[in-house]
Length: 245
Ligand code: HEM
Image 1 (cartoon, rainbow, N blue to C red):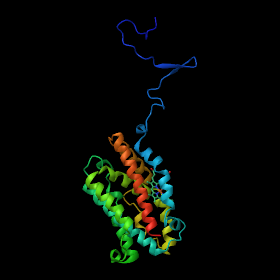
Image 2 (image 1 turned 30 degrees about the horizontal axis):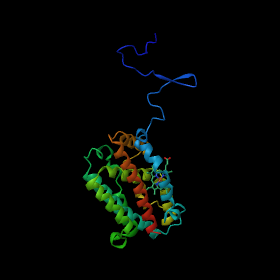
Image 3 (image 1 turned 45 degrees about the vertical axis):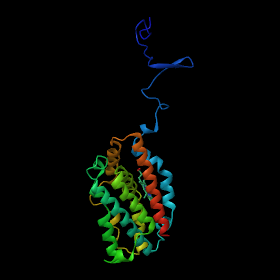
Image 4 (image 1 turned 135 degrees about the vertical axis):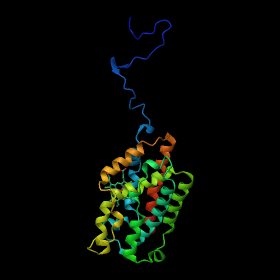
């Protein structure tokens, strides 16, 4: 008799295969059809689900001119001042919540950009840059959203850190090459924003950061929240690029 056949008083155990078209197929622990979106690592979801938003942000407002080196230097300085408002909110929020279990594994001051932005702005626009380059309404709204998250939902800061810092470590390095023609300088000055002296191996760093992200013990709803917040972050960046055009 079949070893697995249910006898009297024996629980019916499903066989580890199923028959399809007269053939027996062994069941994998989880077939692709049974997988849900929550089985995908968060870093992979972020990459896939923000792809279209990334393409849109790349094309909004001043970004096209930036990528072709046609951006007026004044607009580039204004962009830095707007980013200063955003990173100030992000880094204040991350630092205030550095011990939070959703933030701690991803917290690394080597990523922080405020000091580099201030160095570039002081060099390019003078010590009084902040009085001459006010953040746009779009940058203020973006910064306000980050500050609100720091207070009410620190997990959302992770989405904003992903959108800005992983972008700076990736495409930011392409954009850096356009800064010299925009500023019409050959000495390489004014590009501290793109330099991460504390991160000598950006690719290795990004891999470790993604692994730490994937190790966060998140519910399906929390993972969805991070993806939704990252989509909002891409849109907030696009709104700043448009406000500066
Ligand atoms: C025209 C401007 C841009 C260019 C040329 C650019 C280019 C790139 C490139 C080449 C990558 C690496 C893709 C890969 O590893 O396969 C990347 C990744 C990334 N970019 Fe951009 N990018 C631009 C604008 C932006 C903007 C505006 C944001 C958001 C503020 C952004 C956020 C990101 C993020 C978060 C990643 C990491 C994706 C991941 O590995 O999960 N990028 N970008």
